Length: 116
Picture 1 (cartoon, rainbow, N blue to C red):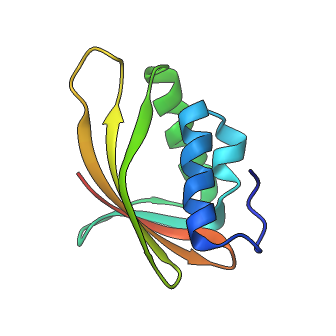
Picture 2: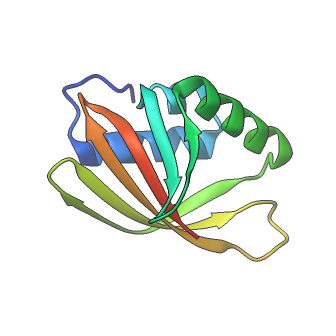
């Protein structure tokens, strides 16, 4: 799945998660705006820009080759998609849960707010 502006917010969220689970960095990053902002929910900005985003997830995929996220629940209101995910790092340690709030602009994810 690619990330043209014609995809619905739900399709964008699904596509980026599928690419994330394949650890396909190029496909995953294609769903994000060049000026994407990543922040802790109600907290500090942790990443700014697609280059920083790409570098972060290149490292995550290198550090955790068995990494994957399982969707628990997804809701969409307008251009905002909220995912509840269970993340598995290595197949041995217990999964942890996150909430990812994706805000879209121009058919791409412009902001992600995480709650771990």
